[in-house]
Length: 216
Ligand code: MG
Ligand code: ZN
Image (cartoon, rainbow, N blue to C red):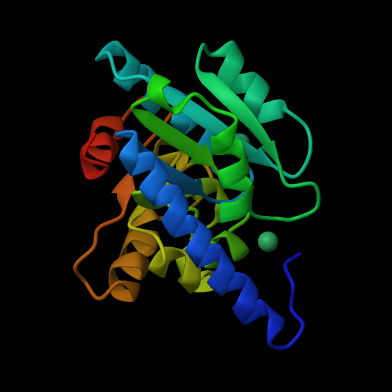
């Protein structure tokens, strides 16, 4: 949980913003492009990062993932087993990554060894929105299995993200969800100009569209 004492939260967010700007400058100074992947547990963030990284690696792009979780090394283990270089980043108690944790993690990495860093945030659709990490892009990933009301329930994270992705599009029928409802909600929320990208990580559809949205 993040701090909610009156007055304190503003300071915490301000401090986070300052450190995020430092992270951004640090990564830019090493020629690194970075992406923060946010979304609920089970949205498919880990699998998506693995697939995107595979495509980039095939083109000679050097990718590293930062696995953000409260405790444990499950996602770190999945990245490693998939052959993706990764660093584990446990928050301990917090339900989101913050810029300071990312700064500490970056300080342990050889930044000259990578062109792209994918950060997997803690599975949570609420407070990661408030804590930019200093990445080039912030991405929110939802899946059809979460129901059709994700955009309506979580305005902030969609408004704070540069790119929104709807995963598991291949099983929308099976889980009785009409993807058009989600796509329309997103379009309406973002003023009609932005389009949510649909994909199936499992069937490997929509991945190239995501990479091009990330200018990768
Ligand atoms: Mg994960
Ligand atoms: Zn949190």
